[in-house]
Length: 231
Ligand code: CA
View: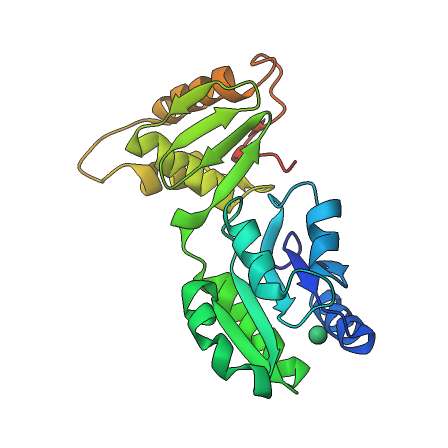
């Protein structure tokens, strides 16, 4: 069972009973759910999508925007997977659009159990390359290894730095042991030391921390390794 405690799901569904049913079921599994009735509400009220791990969007929504258009607009800012909900009758003419951007879809009516299975599958399969993460004032794109600050500074990380950052992001909120970082980012033919890892962390602190001597993000957990703190 995947760790769902820090997983936030964005749910957009206009049918109140269905929305509530989905939300309660997801919350019972430990997911955090942010739910909306309309697509335009999401764009107005949701300032950031950085904490969203997955979206569940109904296609037919009241207002100007349907679920597909909502997905298109969010896709330029965030790459979280989206499961669409749709009535069987609306499926055919939407297939092309699904292929353009959907990660999965369910036709109504569906069993909530089926939705939970799909949610878990999507979260498990999520390719690491799609992750974009906020650390302090930086937005880090792990695919390209480029971090961009809110003031316009751009930092490009090399492959090893990317690997270390990816491991810390995947375990965000939990300490990662130095030996696990070494295993992840160095081959066995190389002979790095724990001190080598420390030097990378020092570099990350210089970039991401407001005060590198008192880190807020790249935390040392004595005896346990390093932790990338949650926002
Ligand atoms: Ca609807």
